[in-house]
Image (cartoon, rainbow over all chains, first blue to last red):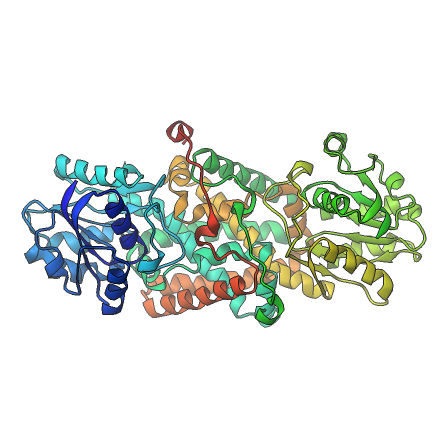
Length: 310
Length: 310
């Protein structure tokens, strides 16, 4: 499908792309670059690619597809570095969780002879690093592509075909709209999860060991996404600032109304909301975007030495 | 272990107790009562008990253990109804998510010759009704008992032994402290989850089908607890009002700080928090209170007709 795919960044997403591309022989050569020698060594030990270099300008040479899989904050430097080394007609894409910023950070630096097509696979886990990836990560998930005006349809088709080969359904969307959709479906949920875990962490009236012991009451659900990669998420909030603040504003308004309903004992309002939200989960399950197994089908292994650990 | 256990309310928790008690022969007779004939018929069809009645005064007759498994808002009426029919020395307990209110609502009505010991198993799923229960629900979970001053140690020991037989670790706690601990580990997380699902439900800039399609970015995690029983949760917020508002106040203060960090691009503050929260999940996993499988070990079955359903 491709002659040479260059991956810049080899964490959860990059390493999952490498594994899936290798398994399905979608490229003759996979070249891997990342900023830390330690991570690059891990990738090589895992046999994720065919060639490795700390220098992105070397791996992009002769590549017909370059995918940037680094934290969004690093894009501009990467774009400047690789710009002069990209092959004629190469496709340059990425997997960043924000898209309007990515266009701003990369497009001005890229030569006219490459096809720049931003992308975002809506998939991941709370784990990070090259060891965390797996080939099936994208299977049955959505991947959003946000091509800029005048994008070559053939190049777009090739990138779409790659993601479909990885098992994803591809959606084409405007970058600005993508950022608004992800602000509510991903960014604000992460911010809220990080926040409540932080709140629970510095209470005086409740000890940390009590929070940990009794977290099965609901709290632990939030700790999963609050365990996501700190640097990646820092960059998401710094680069999708406006959309996040807009959606966070909505969330806070609604939460004030809910707090007011609790204060004034408005049971009707509470029950009406709690019934409505139940239907939304049903729709997500029906859409094949969530498991219908109770409690996520979660299986907790109880250790012998609970007490000591708590 | 018991001659006759009377269960008043036979939803997720009540039916799980019935199944576990039956499997392990912990009672010679299980008597079941609930306010709706329809639910009672379901319980009988499922063979959850040995006798069934819509009238709680009948099922408590001769019972040496009575467990109220109904929404907390119904407790006072139940207490008044059964008070005159309880046997000498019977243990009266419950499974409600709030405890100080339960003491206020029940204790004044109960005769001096019974042992009143409130309880709360920290276990459940997002499903409700007698069909949703299963015998292993309490296995490896915590159960908190909040005995009032002067509780008979022998009665307390018997109730503790029952929960341990169901697989739970038992913690003894003051009712007021329980309500504070659960406000942060369970009640506020539920309120926040209900709130963000509600916020996403009435946006103009993002369609509901987009929220559903791209919910894998984090949003769907919140929909699980936002699918919990509406009436039960309405009563939790109405009866643990002060603790919920206290913890919600903390959450909102912290969220304002976080919003400010986003507004003023304070990447350091964001990364510091995101790193701290990651460690808390690790502690919960080490304590055997959460699975360490990525993405909760979630397995989504992708339907053929996704598109149509979205």
